[in-house]
Structures are given as structure tokens and as C-alpha cells.
Amino acid sequence: MDCVFCKIICKEIPSDIIFEDDKVMAFMDIRPVSRGHALVVPKEHKADIVETDDDVISDTVLEAKKIAAAIQHALHADGFTISTNRGEAAGQTVFHLHFHIIPRYRRDGLTAWPHQDTTPETRSQIAAEIKKQLL
Image (cartoon, rainbow, N blue to C red; front, side, top):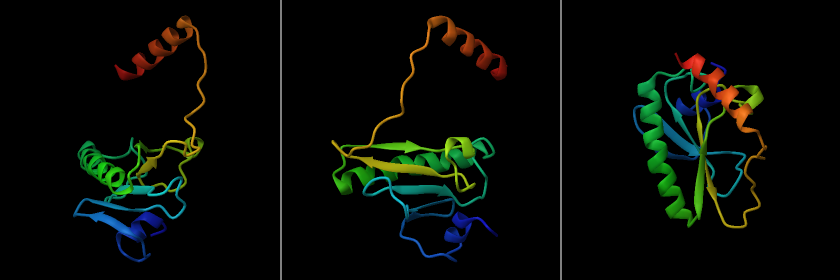
């Protein structure tokens, strides 16, 4: 198995585990964006959020919610960001579904995504294209 997260789940690679049950594991990120950055992963291997069964996503997100609150409280963070990436273009480097919990601190130097101005017509056109895919 080449998946680094599967190896962590199987305890073939050491990690700083902060939570584990029969479905989900959370551990500290080895290249943190901020102090306390953790990853929450389902134990079942699926490449990304779209590939993953809804019940697995539900279990994972519910634990991520609890873990994020615990991280914020333990580290006296001012907030947190929970995110997941799908595909290389989005920055995914490990192809095992995972959620980042990134504690946020006032004046931490992290910035949000750059925003773009769009016209109402452009937004409406994009919305229409997306709606077609949801039918």
C-alpha cells in the first residue's frame, strides 16, 4: 500500500494521533500551516470527497467538528478553518480523503483566498451551468 495515510492508520508510520475510533483518525500535520494544524481522515481509503460514501463523510465531518472545537479550546485559537482539497489543481497531494483543521489566530499572517469581482450576468450563467449538473 503506497498511501501514507493508510500507513499511519495501520501504525506503520509513527504519528501524533489525537483521536481514533473504529472509523476515523486524527493526527497532527507534519508540515503545519499554523500551530495545532491537524488532519482528520476516514480509516476507509477513498481518494477524495466525491469518491467517498456519504456515511463515511458524515462520520468524518462529525468527528472533525468535535476535534476542531477541542483544538481551538486547547490552543486558545481565535477560530479555525476546516478544508479538503480534491485533485492536484486544488492542492491535493495525498489521495486519501482528509480534512485539514487549521487553527487561526488574530494576526497569524494567513490570508484568505483572493476574491474576484464578477458581474451579475456571469454569476447567473455559471449558476445555470451548475444547476444543469445537479438534475
